[in-house]
Every structure is written in structure tokens, then in C-alpha cells.
Length: 506
Image 1 (cartoon, rainbow, N blue to C red):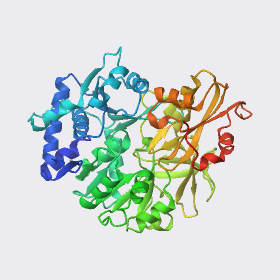
Image 2 (image 1 turned 120 degrees about the vertical axis):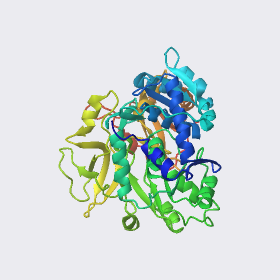
Image 3 (image 1 turned 60 degrees about the horizontal axis):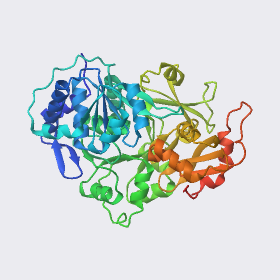
Image 4 (image 1 turned 90 degrees about the horizontal axis):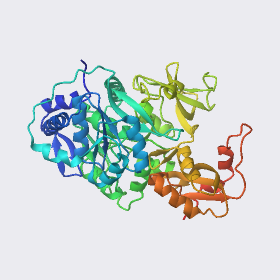
């Protein structure tokens, strides 16, 4: 038997029972004692419904207290939480269901029909997250403590790489504790009682791991929002005296663009990290003028979300840097032969540390390819300067990050290829003023194919953020390399208009 990722909640329920654990939308407060009792009742509910340790539990829904309670209740029982992206289509969700094989899926009411379509023909039970609302005042005895080992699974978080289908990244009790400890050693702002805000989706590593388990283990107070609304978030930071925030550049760009930004009191902010894409210098300067230091971070789901954060002194001197790693997590920049690059020589970023994922769900070969000789090969292109500070310059895997979501070009290409008249397609990234970057499709097709038809076809098959906002049709084959592969980089270079803001597809 080992420590559980839910033990932190139990500890703080004893030590600081009245401290706010979660403040939802600024008004609905669950203190540590209430949250501990509520999640005990949720665990009992799961057990009575037939859930057992090791079973997978899918969760899909908007941010809510019920989402948090359902997830923690499942973890207290020893089940494995599998967050589902609430922007996925039924086809995309069905792939996750077939791969993870959950015993049950918990859904918000707005997603019930979509999830029911994804579960058609399966024996997976579908329950509403609303079932957990009435458990708030229920006094249920804790379920028997599961006989978990340190390497038992706690989460499977799906993420898209360069393949056309998502891979399930594994998290265990051990890897979760390692991540929490490694990050906390170097960040003094992470103290019991500190106030953290989170406005993005609870699905994915940034949600359950970094903004539920991490702060509850540390005894923080978490302010959750239903979603990101710039003016409301800016007001919440000021009024609630928020100290800790993490997000993608889009969040900080939109808040900095508000008329109220200049007068907003942001003096409480102590730890603000920005990741998912490179922040622009004007945005960093706008926040710095308010006394807030935006610190670039580096990571990916396989690395536990964050594996390096630029220290404060370097964030001033080298704002483009993502740091050098954490206390126990090391980063190298290497050539294809595995040797270390010289200063200012670009190469692949590889990472070793106690929080790196122990595997992919049912994809052992893919994990063996990524994890070699104890180093996880990120597929990201980076550079170290003469002092060892890293900056990220490109993505070898050609992932498109739009509004904080990872998009695999090959998945979009597969969908577009289904459209009659399409002969060849290459999806690349285009600059976007709102989301940082967005998919663009370059297509060799018959004359009858239109940009509007491509867009409509994709909307039927893909989540909205994956639908290309730019469609370029041509009447000649796409350029290829000598190997026969489509020359993605040359195609990108042939369309410099996409590095500026191009007109979106109709």
C-alpha cells in the first residue's frame, strides 16, 4: 500500500478544515472539510454503481465543482480518471472510448447526446455529472482505502502528436508526487493558503494534475472559472488578490488589450507562467509595466505538463528563455546522433526526470521510440545559449498549437482526404491574431472542390479548433521530397502570406 494522490486533500481537511479549497465562479465555495466529505460521498456513489479499483472513468463536461468531485471520488476508490476533450466530435470520442475502455463515462448535460452517440453499441454506462450535486450534504463513510502501489495508474490523459490518433499519456501515484515535489522546491509562491486561478478546460494535464491535484496537495485555494472571459478574469485577479496563474499567451494578450487593464490592481500576482506557444515581447512588456513578470515555461503532457520554468532573474534578462529544467529534471539539446549541440546550435530537446510519463496506454512501441536511454525525445527544436539557457525555436513534429490545444496535421489531412475530388492535402500552421496559430490546408484538388466545401466537411468530422481557417486550392500536385514524402516545410515556405494574418476560408 502506498500514499494516494488524494491524501493531500485529507490532510488539509484535518489541518485547515475551513480554508477555501475551491472557489467556483467567485461565489460557490467548498472548504477543505466540505470537499473531503463531498468526495467521500462521490467515492461511495462510484462504488455503489459498480466501479472498482483499476477501472477507467471517462469524464466530459464544462468546468464545474461536480467535475472535480467526480474525479477525486473516483481516485479515492482507486479508479483511473480519463478526461475527455469536450470539443471532440462523436467520432473522436468513440476512438477514446474504444482505446481506454472505460467502465463508465460521466457527462455534463450539454454533452449527453454527443457522448451517447459515441457510446452507441457499447456496454459503457453513461451517467450525468449532475448526480454529484446532491451529494454535497451527504455524510458517507469513506470507502476502504485501495491497496494501491506507487506505479498504479491515476490518470490517462490523451494528447495528439504527429500521428493521426491521440495517445494516452500515463500518470501514476509516483509520477504525480514527483511532479508536485520537483516543481514546488523551486517556487516559494506555492505555499499553503496561496490563491491560484484557472480558467482553461479541466480536461488534460493542466486541469486535473496541475490545477486540482497539485494545489489540493499543497493546501492552496483554487479559483475556478467556467471558462475564460478576459474582463471577468482580470477583475477576479484584482478582487480576489490572486497570487498564482498559468496559461497560454492568448489569455495574457486579451487581458492586456482591455481598456481596464491599465487601472487593474495586479500587485498580488507572484507566480505567473506562460506556455503552449511563445509569448510576444510586447505582451511581456505590457504585463511587466504592471509589475507582473510573465515567465516562459516549457513542457508537454508526456513531461507532466511543465518541465522547466524561466527563473525570475532570467525572465528579465532572457524573456525568450524557458529555463534550464527543475531541481531534478534535466534538459539537453542534441543532434540526430544523440551528441550534445554546441551553444546556439539547434537540435532536439530531450528530457529526463522523475515526472516524465512512464508510458503510453497500450502503445508500447510508440513509447520505446520516444523514451531512449532514459531520455524522452520531445520532437521540439531548441537552442541552448553559452550559459545553458534554453529557448524553443520550432516543433519538429509540426504540431499546431491553437489557443492552447495541440492539433496533429495528419488528423486533419485524413479528414480532408475523404472529400470527393481531393487528390492531395498538406496541413500547415498559419498565424492567427487570436489563437497564436491555426491550421491551414493546401490542397491539390479537382476544380469542383471549393474552400467552403472543405470547411463544411471538416466541421462535420473534427472539433472546431481543428477546422482549417485557411484553405488554399491548387491545380497541380503538391511538392514532394526525394523520398516521396510531401515536402511540408517547402510548402510552408511557398506561402509566406500565412506567416501574416491571412483571410480565413469561407
